[in-house]
Structure formats: C-alpha cells, structure tokens
Length: 106
Image (cartoon, rainbow, N blue to C red; front, side, top):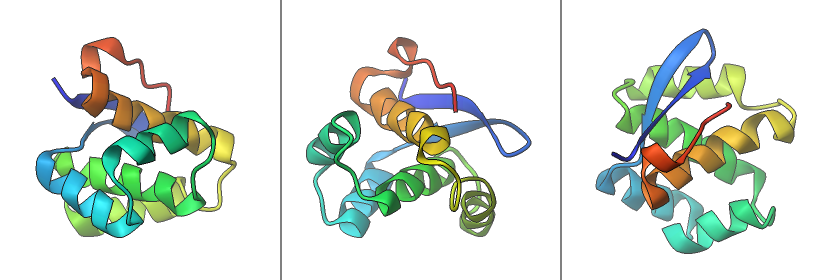
C-alpha cells in the first residue's frame, strides 16, 4: 500500500503519490523522486517541495485539485517547516517503503 493517512486541516485524509502524481511531482520540482526523497531526508529541500508533495498526495488520495490547493494554501504554506516536513516526508516514504512502514504525524 502506498497511501499514507494523516490528520491535515480538519480531519484524517489519504495521501497517495500514484505514478501520475509522481510524474507531476518530478515535473513541478524538476527533480527525480529518488533525489527529492533524499533531499527531504537530508533537510536539503526547497520550501516549495513540501507543499507540492502534500498537494499532489492529496490529489492522488482522491481530493479534487481545487480543494487540494485550498487545503495546502491554508494549512501548509506560511507554516513552520517543522509542522509541514514530517507530513511531506511521510507521503514520500509511503511511496518509497509502503505505508505499513510509515507513521504520519502530520
């Protein structure tokens, strides 16, 4: 299973980086998924990487794109990095390791 579930905004939500969402993430960040995951783990990421992982994870999990953008604008942008980084990392880790191996504390 590649879906992480975490509380985000006002309720528990599914986050899935499907193949299509990974392709979009790679295009948006101009970075391969492996390098992006390493950047997050090594704290060498760009701030925009975090919101893109969360936004595309929401869309992949079934949230419509407009709602995903609204949620990210409200609950991920202009927030302390320490609040957003664990969720973005958990979403990528679910795709990398499988959700059974990941605990999202978002």
